[in-house]
Image (cartoon, rainbow, N blue to C red; front, side, top):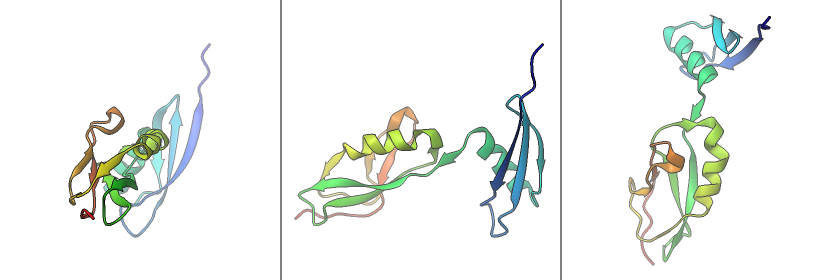
Amino acid sequence: MSRNIINKANIICIGCPKGCRIVVESENGTISQLSNYSCPRGKEYAREEFINPTRILPTTVRVSNGELPVVSVKTAAPIPKGLLLSSMNEIARIEVKAPVSIGQIIRKDLMGTGVDLIATTTVARK
């Protein structure tokens, strides 16, 4: 006889300033109930956050021959939350040559996510 595994998660919605404290209940990994949301955006946010949490990753990359030693970068879209640490390890090994332009792709397809790492500022050459 299989045993039902029931979980409850509390998620604070970031879809609007209300910050609803949404309760997600699941049974065997499938959402069985969502409560305490006040709009459809909140319901969808909680569903996605429970099933596949993602984040935009902002950080810096080293620059050689630049006016600044680093350039600020971010992922062009959210990536799976579980890949943040390994992505940071990969990014720590990157060094680009100046000049760097805002919007420039620093690394295509970061960690096989299909999401590019892009520069968010400009760094001129020394």
